[in-house]
Length: 353
Image 1 (cartoon, rainbow, N blue to C red):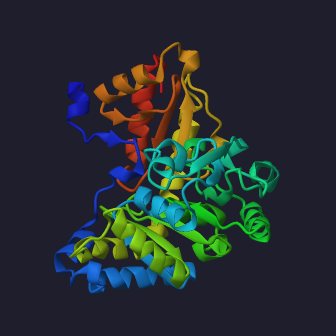
Image 2 (image 1 turned 90 degrees about the horizontal axis):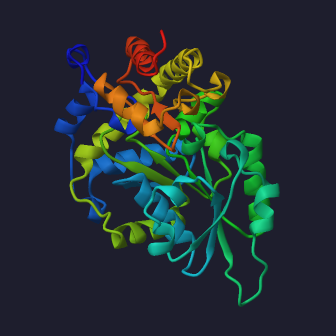
């Protein structure tokens, strides 16, 4: 890292998972009332679960150490080994969750690419297996909102509602990987309950843009959550005095959605600045939440090379392909830091800011 960069805090745009708990979260954690959650006796965890269910208009919810475990629990609860799960070709459950769908749930992902990561029934229907006993059967449809690897794109509610309705008519449940569903809610100006009401189960993360240090939630019917609790224990997700973590989750759930719009504004500002730097390709109009992916192919350098050079200037991003870089805004990066990041990118790519 350069001397100048060393005098300033690192600007970490690799992910919104790097957010640090706020002072209010830390106080709540220190003061949390706790019990043994495996016995369902941790009052803070119980409050978090009840509040999450209330916000999403569901009967129940369950606290998990991670979103990956919550997604896997949902999949394993809805399916049996030897069945198939339909998802988009760059879905997080397919690319970044250690092939748990296959390795642990025993299911085969059946994938299809979709523009902007947004599946439609026309793309899904041909993947549904006929009811022939020697064919693997379709067990579940999975959507992702916002879609990570398509740059934080948001599902139009009319499309996701249509998929759910048609899936239910075909006898299929639909699970939502809503890791950043509050970002989608802010972008759409509609409540999370409204945009997820037709899904059979929803996972969302407390530890990304909402800023809690640990944890994700799974919401659904009481019967589904009762079954999911058994699966969570099977996967090693039974926690004891987890209220010290859930306390931060409660703060995150109540307070951070109010300020997510700032992250979206900063992401758009970053995208607009990037679009003016020679060697960078990005359409700022496609940046609607807090994730953006840009291409540096025309600079003649690889994404890994550019990221390594940026790190020396105190700016961290993540290569997602040979020439593509992902950056994610969050509440620990303000507008001044975004401008510093743009200056560093312009310097690295040999352009003026």
